Length: 321
Image: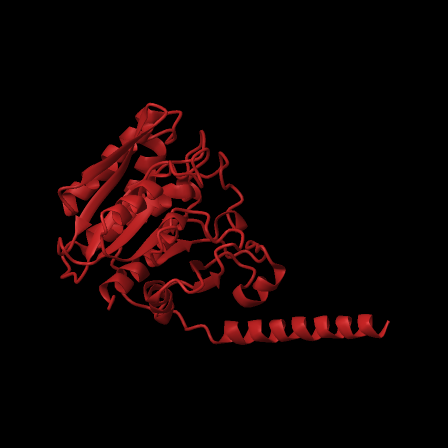
């Protein structure tokens, strides 16, 4: 009985400590910065509606639509990061394509910015992950006239979604392995995974652990930088820089790679080859209840907030040491 009382008391103290720590963490978050935003909401909207309305449906069952999306992405890259190229590979006699555009010194250390352009089964895949592709394209446009220290490879991946997820047939695995096999020096990777859906409604944000609400709040109005422990200076810099002068509430989440959810996108394949990598996300199904559903449509997304996330990333990349 004494043991149970001690255990109960310890648990109460632990949760009280976490609650207080959470309140302190929330109070210490930087205030939002008001400044001109470089990202163009009209271009973002045009990309979003093309990918969701003109490329239905972007998955392995509709190769023609996947190819149509890939051709559109290449055309946008060609305008700013020429010459863009396809990285092709086959799965069960079907040909799939990653799309790659590059900026900066050819022989410099590389930064990979990636987003998958396929969607899960027969639905629009607006947030998952046309929104990430929009971010990829707009970042390329913004960075095209900057003097860059690093080579930046913008990569639109195929086959992130089931049945390919967590297999060597993911487009991001093919790309990461090619870097490793060719001994390319990589500074780090930024994966854009669902950056379009937000809500100011209390209770609109869920978490895998309820105590996280004490740290991050119960409104789905923020963007998250997700990274694993001990994954290099690049990941830490991206997280710290995005939070330093935020134009949208920006949070970071660090955990071991085995924690459920932290590896649920293309960045996992760069971790597999020991590259420093982060995922930029609105937390996916923990917020967007139309995840992998027919309701994941473009009109539900907040294009202004997407532009704010892109702007933070743009400034982060420009400031990269």
